[in-house]
Length: 412
Image 1 (cartoon, one colour):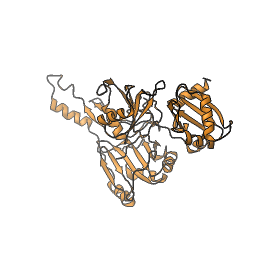
Image 2 (image 1 turned 180 degrees about the horizontal axis):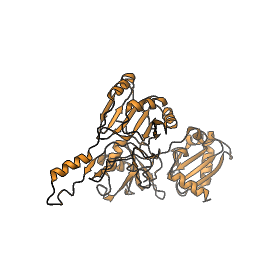
Image 3 (image 1 turned 180 degrees about the vertical axis):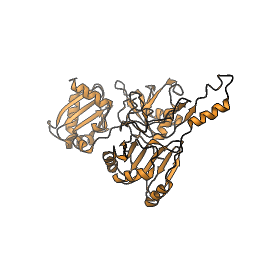
Image 4 (image 1 turned 30 degrees about the vertical axis):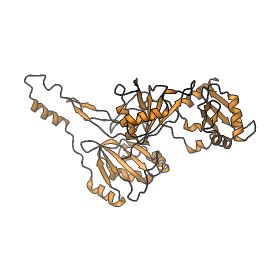
């Protein structure tokens, strides 16, 4: 099973429910309620908003992530409220009300599809998986090769969907989320073998009319494997945090810890924990709900880290600004200008400007080639009293860059 996620590089907490896909929350089903609808986003990064997705509703293409499991609780709290109440009769009536028509996939058409493509279809854990290709060798495609598909008719299956998405490129895997009645949940995921086909699918298949009056919503899927963990004692080192997270959660790949701006020997009170895949991160998030687990006797706050934004390659090819982090508060703009001028090997006019804000800075070059040369020479270089790290600012898409841009705009 392929899960989703993407990571943020610079350490901003995002508690919005907008981009990320999480485990669907349990829903209460009473006599008055109708068939449960799918909650497309348990959470994402800043506002804790949620969206209920049904077949007739529109889809915001940026608001989805991978979700698999669903649980339904039947509320029978009123079953003993009346002395003359017939429990067996009530239970029978309740079952009739909750029954849904069983949807049977068109087996003949699906068999023809599998015979043509030689792919296999397996149904497990509430989803149908079509793929991977029979001749595929190696690991799954890299991140950024998956699209989210919303507004799928509930009785629509691979025999209709796969031929449509094959138009954009070769499919590695197609996943259709299923309901207990046999119908799909109105959404699924398609993984292509490369990013070019993925972008083509979003461009060509968003708002595609799959049936008369029924259009699909297609957007890039956000696969998040990184959690924000706040409330960590500032005296703890990276190796201590890594060991502790591996002890209480599974699938930990790495932790990212940022030093305090005032004291480089201390952390900032939070860390980013990178997991091997989305499922491991989602399970860890559920386990670390506040109140259940403490770290070193401290209450912790856990949520998804903000995904790193995808930047168009054409834009990247024009970037001439470097983002420099982990600076000391005493480091001056003049010192940085001198350092980067020497690194790029240019004259005094190779740098347009330097703007430093607390422990990070932006260095504006006149030519991209000079920026690349300086980045390669200075990245991870030790400066007096601190460790500097120069990076292309396109990767720093969130809080630090936004704060710096606002500061520069205000002339601070």
